Length: 278
Image 1 (spheres, helix red, strand yellow):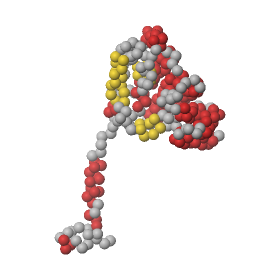
Image 2: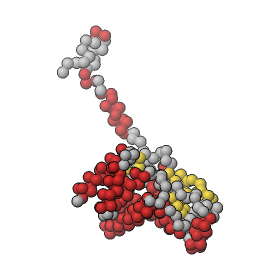
Image 3: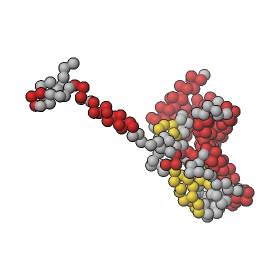
Image 4: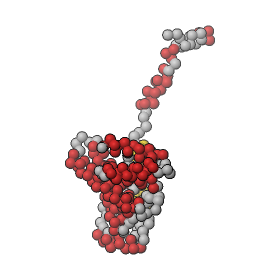
């Protein structure tokens, strides 16, 4: 191979040859690799956020996620978001440690007097707070908090969409815990199967709740527009074995002229999965 530096001998640079072009860069790459950035931990994204309970006026703090620090890396077909290094879904249910009132963060502050009365009479009288250990919420901690949120939503006679959304997020948490256990070779197969069934039960309830809410409530619903909810209904129907209903809802998305292309693309993918499952 010809020397790229041929002809520079007259300038006093006769010691260079073609092998020297990237030698230093390769050396530097090795040095950089030896100083890799420390692996991020879940507690790096968690902070204590202050709340005032709308039921008993107690001021308290609840663990929350610094949304500006987490990075979204994708989503499941039923719109469950996935973030790098942390499952932020674990931190969405807020619970008062004094009276037991709990709700998803988007609903926590909105309680009518009649609802507060129902919470006090049916939740607070028997509530015993158990403080979570550690700097983060475990999946078990998060599941308990979301179950409390669902119980309070039922007691206060919350909207169907709120109950459905809480069931959906609870199902996602069962999925998250199941996926975590599946990475452990010593995990109990029975527990993994139980988590799958618990998730499915949540998704069945979420489907029924969103279907009921669709004809009764205004949009946006739980932060979603009409076509996103239609797609979600189609996906939940598919996951829970209601194939005919899934076909109906997915068709509604595909024929909608004002549905955005992202949702239409997801609906097309779901249609392919439905056909492949036939």
